[in-house]
Length: 523
Image (cartoon, rainbow, N blue to C red; front, top):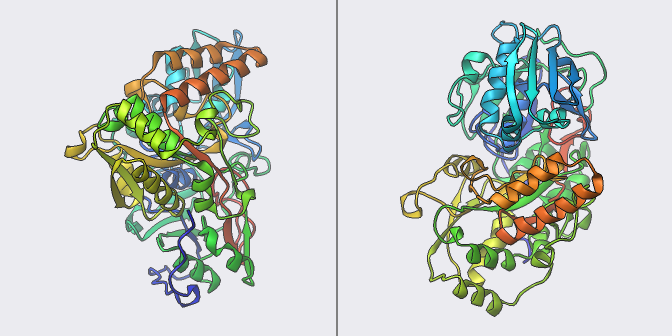
């Protein structure tokens, strides 16, 4: 399927710019979508992750090469064959309300996060106790060795952010509305306008860790006083605003606009996230047609990943990999098990026969179509067409991404506001092995939205966690992929690497898994 042609001349687009506080020129950033919540534990929304990283800190950060590094912690004492981890907080940590960051804040924050995150649940299931030793020290005591603790605590979605104990003890299944972090930027809640603007200001009392900045690790230093996020759903308007100097940085320009932006004096286009995103469709295992295995398998068979990625990223093959399995190309988990399910194209009559055998009789499929997200919008354009072609009764719900984030939490039946499927772009860096990706879990009610349940899949993942031999781990990755593709926990759509575009009036942002605002200067 060809990409839709842009309507109207980009040069004629007009940006209505929100009022700006006068003084030092703010860094103006256009995010990929609307910021609905700052609670990066409650949701896996990428926009929330990116905003929360400015305000909250994590115990471990990551380098550009995805290696975990101590960040809030001064260091760790690892004993008893990695069954006991004692973490000590570094000096100078204070929340934005002036209170010191204490070990009890971290323990409460971890307990809240572990209830929501699949990898956090893995910690919880293997944990004897997580307890406070004193104001700066706390300890994990595991029943089994757990050498992967730093890797898990440095993950980004849901993010194990540290917040004050009084907030961390709230219900993790309800979004926290009071935003109190300890990071290099403060969130200015009074200036927030949904669908228009979010504002962050430099935390003047922040004490950076010693050392060079490397993605989310090291001495993170805010070099601008104010960062404004301007939500501009129309891609042409965002590109025009960058060209005219109204904004400084566009997170995800429409691929069709990249050639024009590359030719624009004063604008740089480049890939900052060199691992990119792992595109998936997430089916609801609890409600409607997608609760039926045969229907999910027919939906998987209907998807041509190359077609989806071409619609999403354009003809430049360097910006995507497809077809892919459950682990991204080049990772330790990559394998060929079950790949015939995504490589071999079935005919439309064959897939219709699969649906008939599954007992499908035209029931409604509620497919979320986030029109304000450049990449999801393109993905669903192809997906909806493919599903209709095989005879599915697609109820394509065109809405904004914020609404998807809210509605996908619902367990309701389809006629009571429920849903069947939504698109997502998970960090590809977390799809390298079975430790972190939500798409290979079968842990039912504790799973990521969609709630797949399969004891065998969980047992295979547990075996991988316990295994220390690399060859045997590789074999288990193959079994996990084959099982997950057979059950259709997710429908993989491809790995894509969206370029960003920024003004030469700002310094080149640091490379990493997400846009980061420390280390960026504006001339």
